[in-house]
Length: 233
Image (cartoon, rainbow, N blue to C red; front, side, top):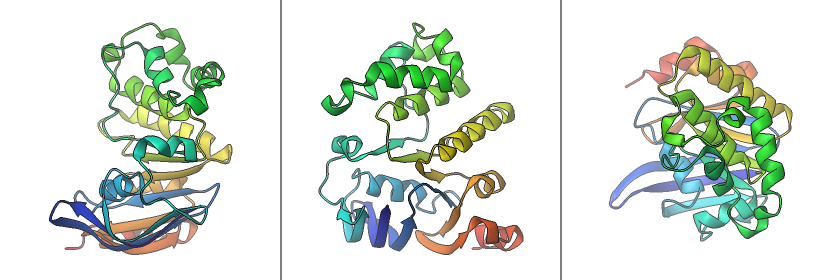
């Protein structure tokens, strides 16, 4: 589905990723974990075309993604839900959702997708005409995920969905991830909670210092070894 090979990327003259390679299989949840500064978000941004790539390749279904502008990615079936929610606070919940189906390809089915988002997150339906800026952190994360699903993506890239949320809300979000996985969606999840991330994943990558230091099927992960690598200097 998505193949990243020998990737180098960063910000200006500062390189962050060093020869990173990952393989994301269709219909699976691939989780990328690692400490702050490991390069996880940089990798997601490079995949989405938000950062230039200085070396290496990114392919979707054996076709190169290099040169594809970010706003064209939903038309290819790839959507990213960014860290920090990034909802439009002065717009209503429903207006925020509709922005997820803004491209001409997805506008025709926007009402149907909106109803699906409400079915997945009933609290959003109750507050559909409420401004997004009045939502709690958990509700804003539900809105960000609902907005991402409006384009009915094949590949859903989610960056730190549990960040700053209460445990009960985190439980709900991971239950939602389980449902999305059961639907057959391909998911790339960046998450710092190692136990939760490994528990929901099919494949696990651990990053340190801009490099992949572990690649393993989730069922085979030794959590003690994982944490030793996670906290290694």
